[in-house]
Amino acid sequence: MKSIVISQSEGQNKLEMDEQPRPEANENDLLIKVKMAAVNRTDILIKETNTSYGSNPIPGVEVAGTVVEADSDHSFAVGDRVMGLVNRGGYAEYAVMPADRAMKIPESLSFKEGAAIPEVFLTAYQTLFWIGKLQKNDTVLIHAGASGVGTAAIQLAKQLTGAKIIVTAGTERKLQFCSELGADVTINYKKQPFDKAVLEATDNQGADLILDFIGASYWDKNLTSIKTDGRWVLIGVMGGSKLENMNLMSLMSKRIQLTGTMLTPRSDAYKAELSREFAEEVLPYLEQGSIHPVLDNTFLIDDIHEAHQHMKENKNIGKIILDVGSEAN
Image 1 (tube, rainbow, N blue to C red):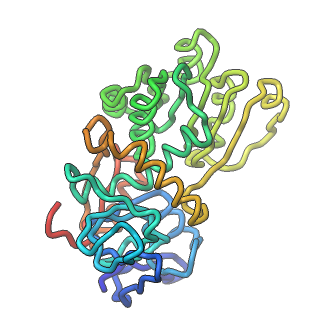
Image 2: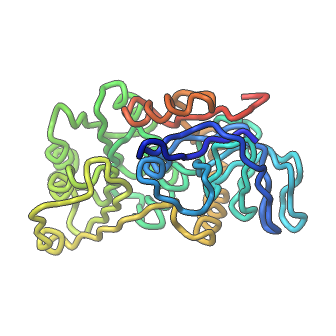
């Protein structure tokens, strides 16, 4: 089958088109004919660091497609349109997906939209609610508001809790888009210190919850921005992972709960339970259209290098999609 694999050449990790054997589904798996996959920063990290969460040489952690082999013990049949997380292997014509984390694509959504949901919406859901404990009267600060996870988090927070939403982004175009999704306060971090703007928007109280994709470069401003007894969830380190001269008393004095998380290396059982709860709580909103996946550009799988570069340059608003072999979009 047609696949993208990570190979080494002249000391560098590269993405190359290759022919790989079609994967075999185990008893509790579905074999999926992939229509669309999506690009995530974890794919770029795996490629650049040669970090592996399994032996599969094919990157890609989420797909949308049709079932070609189904276990009769599960509620899926051959031909069903499904989306979900895979244990790598998404950048290929066929992928194996554990049946207990597969979700049926709502009839109103395309394969492109289906591929744009699993990783970012599940990340946003577990970050906001499982870890962040977001409540109705809370204020949440979402960095990188126009990213895939950011656009998902804005909608989930607005629709499921009605919490006050503050976002940061680097262009007026991105901020306007975040407002249209439901953000209450938007901050251009390139034009003003976001911590001062957060305090102004919260009567100097700070945010109850921070979703932080940036890490080290935002450390001091996040400390200023967070409320006493606030929850701070570290999802990414786009601004660096190492701190100098950190004073732990600054965390202790405000009684801050700081939690780091990554979805990809979580256990199969965790992902299955997260997918089940998400499907139960959020799929109705997706079916109605009150929550929707945000699509950026679609690239053919042959243009994987351009797709990764588009993400690395932070050009996207929402999800970058890979057309693996669709007959319909």
